[in-house]
Length: 239
Image (cartoon, rainbow, N blue to C red; front, top):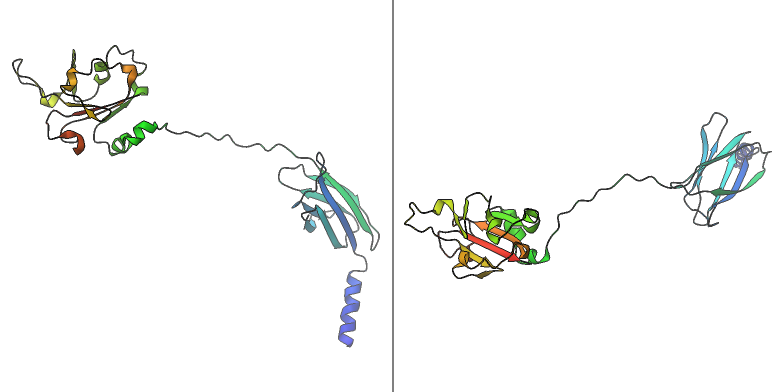
């Protein structure tokens, strides 16, 4: 019993000179309460002595303050921090505060997003899957649109392994040994459909109507298109 009395007396002595701060923090423009605002008691040496966060109603209560002189500092991300004071309360005094905080613009680092445009049609016909495998040569409209092409055959100029002569396109490895021999012609598909006598029957195509082209030699051509022909395969996808 005596120990309990001594403890209570000691506790009362500790809080004999304590002070209390009760307050609410609001947005200066909207007058709405701000939660999660850090409210700090700063002593004369600029050290933090007490710290409390506002609740969902913007209210905070700090008790047991024993400093004779102190400042009140607030912090919340996205708002201007404030420091008020100094305050010098008498023993057991309660300071009631209304703190208004002003929102500050947050400076964000520039975010650059880059992406490769995916044509839905080419995606449906698995163009991008085959391109990822890298077994042939792949050209899309954006690769030749500024080349000023006059015919569809000009699209194939510059593709490694291809020879373009007038209205003929064939692989160099399959070219004839003499002028008297004919070179094996590649199989030509337009939108997945095999074109009979293909290389001779695509002159009607305009470069502007071509969305993409795939070129394969006979070794690397997809099985569903190669048909065992040695002349290679050219797939043309239109807009």
